Each structure stands twice: as C-alpha cells, then as structure tokens.
Amino acid sequence: MRDRRVAREARRAREFEAFVAGAAGRLLHAATLLTAEAPDANPRARRLLTLALAHTYARWDRLRGEDPYDCARQHLATRFARVTWHRYGALVRARPDPRAPLASLAPRERLVLVLRLYEGVAEEQTAALLALPAERVRTVCDRAAATLLHPVRPAAPRAAGGPEPAAS
Image 1: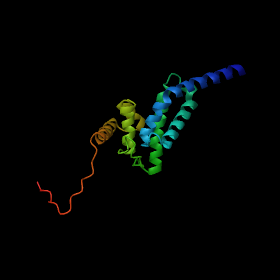
Image 2: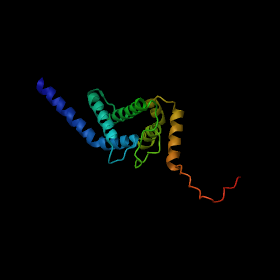
Image 3: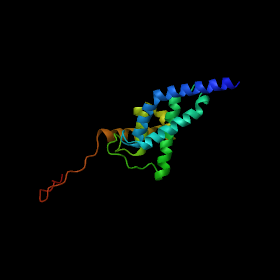
Image 4: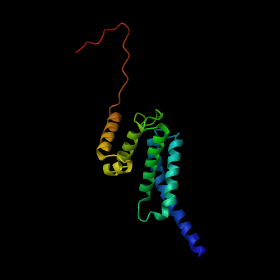
C-alpha cells in the first residue's frame, strides 16, 4: 500500500516537472509582460509564476483531462488582476519599467492584450475569465494595440521668440 502511494507521488512529481520544463518559460514571459518589468529584473513576474505553478501543482491530481497550462495561465491572470486591484484600489498604472515592451499600457490593457494576442485566448474566454463583457474586452484590446502601434509622442518644445502656429 505504501509502495503504491510512493510510486504515485513520484509519478506525479515527474509529470509536474515535465510540465514546468515545457511551460515555465512561456508563463514567465507572459507574467513579465503583465507586470511591465524588465526581462532581466522581474521579481513580481517570478512571484506570479511561482504562485501559479504552486496552485497548479496543488490541483494536479484533480485536473482530470484539463490542460494544466490553461490552469496555470488562468491563475496567473486572475492573481495579477486581483493583486493590482487590491494594491492600487483600481486597475491603475503601477510604475512600469520603461524598458518593458508594454510599459505604456495600463494594467487592464496589458492583461487583455497578453491574453488575447500573446496567449491567443479567445475573446469570449478572456471576457469570462475577467468577468467583463466581450465588447469591453474587444474595446480594451483595440485601444491597447492602437496605443502600442501609434504611441503618443511628447510635443516638441517651441523655440523662444519663434512664430506662433497659425490658427486654422
């Protein structure tokens, strides 16, 4: 009886290690995009990844045909949203690292964009995961993509004593 339990636990550990070896890099990249940290200095992203993997390991035996990657990704996304909400009172801007590719986006925009474009999660699934209407997810994703594709540039300083711009 004990040998059977030990063998089952060893198999579980091997399966989970194989999952982590295949999925951890992509999940860490997604977490780094979410937290808007630099890829080489991402402690918040690593903490999110650790919590998501711990949650997935705790549920490993109960997954029963579910994709463990989906489980980890869902926990990562919901944990990011919850922590951001509680820490800042709303999904407002944390201080992103300017080297981060999504630094110009608000946390909710990063979350939707990462789920939709980087992870390829369907609009309806993203809406259900975040408890938002699908139309809102589409709007946030479109706005975030537009912000990245057409960033607002700071206005050039006018030369002192130069001509005033003509009124149209």
